[in-house]
Length: 148
Image 1 (cartoon, rainbow, N blue to C red):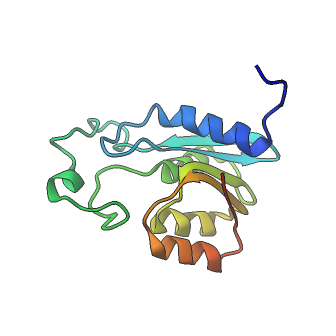
Image 2: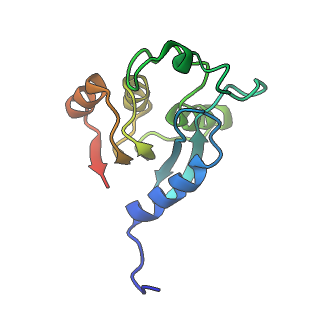
């Protein structure tokens, strides 16, 4: 075992990977963690709204319609991990302005717009996501973007 401690970004990305294990989406498991001053404020994972049945192969509209990743986000009954993390902050009165959002994949354009208006200062993610508008909006925003 290595004695090297993980960086803060590596540490929170690992936690994001653990959070994604709670996801109920049948297409992709995603987790998100919002952090400020190296303290976790909220977490979120993707799946159906609370009190709804979990998504299944039979209820996934995107699978039925063969919608490619990164397109037609409105054709999904679930919420994204980033959305759930931001919503949890609102529900519990947690100030996330100036925070960092960690997630498994580059956020979609809807989540990017939410991050911008929520005041995120930094985004750290692992994998890519085929949403060119989201990437363009991140470049135009003041959000520092780090891909691990």
